[in-house]
Image (cartoon, rainbow, N blue to C red; front, side, top):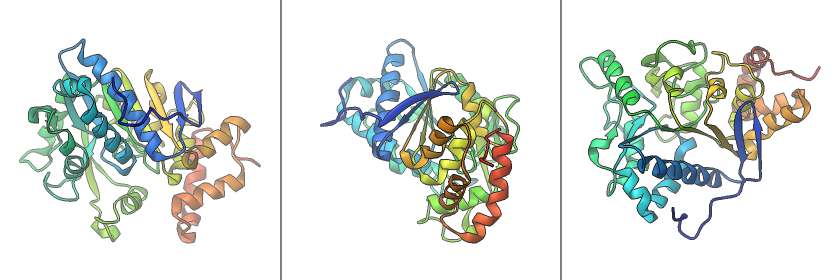
Length: 325
């Protein structure tokens, strides 16, 4: 497959394997997203040469913005990827209970930032975006989950929430059961993250929808070939450590279940990976590092940091992440 124009696949600053996952740390989010785009596209082309269709689950979030740009550029330059797109069926993770054309919906975000650039090669019938704006959303959840499973899925680009959510599968929701799409209430931590992620859309917490639809972890884990996790933000150092530091899989951190997948890859940056790397080298996290994670997580808001400290320490204990005495 041709490389991105005038670029090579970025080399990570360092790579390591931990808890059944391959980790790659990149200097910038752009390098991270480019590496994921090349890796996923390469696998997509390979699969399209041997099977009738390829199923691709994709997140709608700022963590994916570098991937979107790199993947679209690669599609514009690569004949094999253009051919693979004609056989690829895309599905999204989650959605607010809004019409697809609403500027706050994830369908709108994905069309604007990603799928609009793939139109020359992606047949309209291959784009399946979740649409809760229907007469029977519960039936739509069942039908959509069935369609995702019928398509594989084969590939997935995920991100991780600041509290460890996967899609909108929030902490506290069971990790077992049947693969499904479900309606969930957003946690207060997730509402705060939506404000941070989408400042142009949400200027006040009251503007953030308090419910959403999402695939659950059992459905995410049905991805057959490859799951790439992109985690570039400093605010996610806590979630990256808590989810992947130990071998514990627990509903307190839904993304911790990625350790159960044989084809898991995490691509990140030094700003997000430092706490996990410290824990791997020392088998504990210092109190100074705990403070640093809280400052990044709360954007330095003193009141939030004090409120979140107890939650963060409780989650770290649940995940068996030792804190220095």
